[in-house]
Length: 440
Image (cartoon, rainbow, N blue to C red; front, side):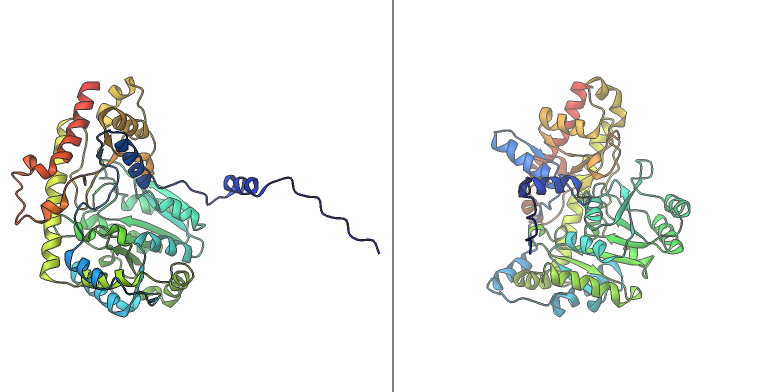
């Protein structure tokens, strides 16, 4: 009997196969722009450059002190906890959002994860094939996550005139023109990169359109507790049966590195979606770390200390954001004053011709020159899905000493412009204005 001929040896190495696969993989994606700008700023600082960091959106305030104390008490905890999150934590999370937003969060419908970012991805992965509708501008990770989850991402462009919000008419037109389909609309309010929220009537009409066309809504409300007036309106109030809501500790509690996010799945969506999400969690992150869940239970407990902690942050962020917006406006940079969080999305359209004369025609070229010439790190609007020619940039006004400000007995709005704790914020804004005046 003749032995079968040996298969020819491959002349392609494992590394070559791997690199060829990167080029062919439809879900391949680059590193997050927000994380990249943080690393670039650090590298320049190691070279002796003074950099004003308006690029990376990390809360400058210290973590809520009672939660820190609980974390220390539970540092030795090591048990695997329930995949969905402990019952006690989920009860606190649900009670917090019922109190804060007036929404009907239920502990049995809450899922806890290592950051809301992972929950966003898990949701997109858990859905059947869907269109993921994403405003432009919107947070940098939504579209890459949709691609990684095998879903189809669709950008809906917004403008300065619409306050960087997609309009109900725009959503209605898209759904009518493209016919019936399974769709998930992602809405982030207060928004990253804009710091803006829709007004209540705008939101109610957007909810009516979503309901009419059967569009699911993922409301990313991680900045909701930092609405500067304490008046955040949850999207679930206007569309309770079709809105999934995410939040977490990273922004309002200053605990980004703790990695704890929460998701509420409305009962109207049934049991299957939540079961699929828990299944994904069980096969990926297993559970959030034990000490962090214990600390989060303390953080989410509604107390007078928590209320004071939040109110102090809101007042300072509102004061600083309004000052920055007013100073940029005075320099001919169109800037909406923020509604919440710690972002601005200034539009340099008024300086387009002067910038063009200097070879700057895109938002990415503008951020490169501001970093090189003025030592100010911002992110281009193109990183958030805007057309590269739109000269809008994200400015995260967080380069200040939040520990100092939080310790103040009151927020002195009148003295904010001269406050030493805000020296780098003022320096960065004036560096932008000075660069425009020098080169305009």
